[in-house]
Length: 290
Image 1 (cartoon, rainbow, N blue to C red):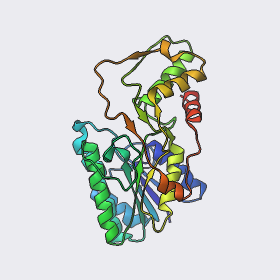
Image 2 (cartoon, rainbow, N blue to C red):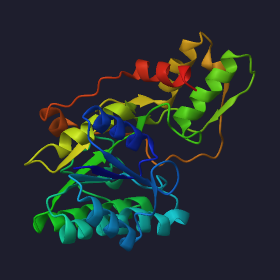
Image 3 (cartoon, rainbow, N blue to C red):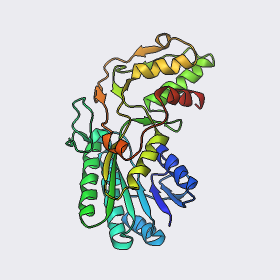
């Protein structure tokens, strides 16, 4: 039986696809653009036809516009909340033995700067967190109806597939150009912000580890280790043996969403998953492949 990945065009989708290919499992890749089947997870008829046609062993809902801006409120609701409902109702009607993975986020929890586990309280302070919280409660409701609905709460993770507007990739690209002779400056807001820097390929393996369980349905998937944006700058510039301070300027008027966001990955670690790629190795990977 195949698996269906909604949002297959994202970095997590890419690495999850490769994991299943390595197991000789067929993957039905779905996204609004890119290779595979093109379609919108917010379209109930489209989702239902896919589930009814393929009767997958597992479905992964990775699709989202990962922004907390208010302007994205309707898109977040449609893709994350409605998409979750469409998948779970289609599974209930046509393929109740399918496992369903719903993506959660560290950003949907009340954040005091302390490590966050899957048991901590939610806090709806952005349109993005509202959509994520609603999708989790939807998953829990369908779980009460007998559907095997899993939620993995993901924290900051990166790969060479990151889009250029993300600060990690933006820095890696600039470092590569500076290594080639550019004299540009990188504008950074708050360099003291602390977050995790996991490798997306490791996170994909964590997702798979969770979905393989029969009695554990929710877990934070993260490293539990934070680094600052300044740490990332230092790592990337050390690769090209240059002083980051000569190429960075402070952005004025910048307000950060949080000062520290870190997971408590005790549960997922107890299931046998731990990240393999280190912070230093991730920097090397992203600078070398930009």
